[in-house]
Amino acid sequence: MLDNPGLVFQRFGFVGVHESQDDAGSLLASAYERIHNAFCAAQQNDLYPRVYQRAAAMSSMGRTPHVSGEIEFEERVAVGLGRESVYEVGLTFHPVYGVPYIPGSTLKGLLSHFVHDAVGQQRAEFQRGGEGHRFLFGTTERDDEERNRGALIFYDALIKPEALSSLRLEVMTIHYPSYYRGLDTPHGMDDPIPVHFLSLDRPRFLLRLGMDCEDEKAEEWLAWSWDRLLDALFLWGVGGKKSSGYGRAKRRLAERDAQREQPSTPRAGDVLRVRRIEPPNGKGGVWFETVDPPRLYGDLKGMTPQHAPAMGEIIELKLKKFRKDLSEDRVEWDRLPQATPLTRPRDGKGGTRTRRF
Picture (spheres, rainbow, N blue to C red):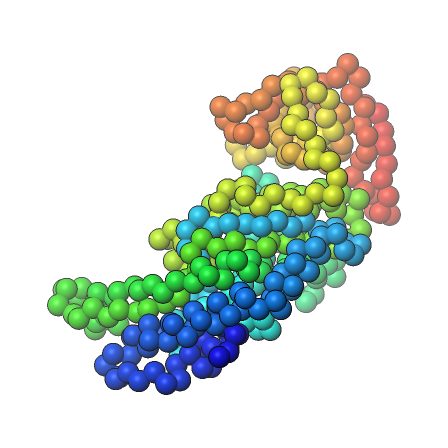
């Protein structure tokens, strides 16, 4: 008996299954038992659990900062349904270990689109082609001399060994095949065609993210990107059939595997380091966001653009109050008796400058 589920699914699962051509839709259903047995064998084998444990300990290895955590999905997950397969539907298996996984390229595409669509609506630098987006994800433009490779490192999300038993056989039924082929109207007289496919029932995955850059704010960029990735998995989901609720992660289950003490939640009256940012679309005034996590943003009443620090300049302001009626991250700032800039944006020589105002 083979204990590599990917190999059984892609090469041997259909061997010995005898179905007529008219009943080809049940081919996967007939092979499901041997595929499921391979999943059970992989779970009992000690090879993949050791691989998983080694990957889980990776955040404490190497010089580049990493964050990791286990993430559980709210419903079923089906990644790779559109892949070529003898069963007409696919499932993504690791090319070496043969277990279901979420490719790092899939996570990168998900986060890239989420940052562009969700964050980029308020901050133009995170739209595709913007400075922030290019820094995190890179660019494929060959004539771009500034940067081709993004700073973020996306690792494959590995399924937890205990979750290998979550394999399920499902069926989706095509009720209007002639309509989908463009041959007729959806009159309801066609014979329904059942199509079997495989999914994972609320599995857990090991999620990992790294940052490879020499920026002094690398760890803050990494923490910010990690939070956005969790938001994307919760709000958008990953894999196929997302419109039916598949692929949605549980909110905030995967916490950062921190090597340092987590910062406490700021309170009204605290003095925080902030940087000036562009106002959100349709807003006026002078706006700032926190430099250190968690991200809080808001405007400073009474400050005019003429007397404000430059964009990106870091100063200290007092947290006046939260505006939870507008957003969980929205606040109002209050200036200190003597507000002193801490740093200015990097100059053309790559250094930093300070000044007072």
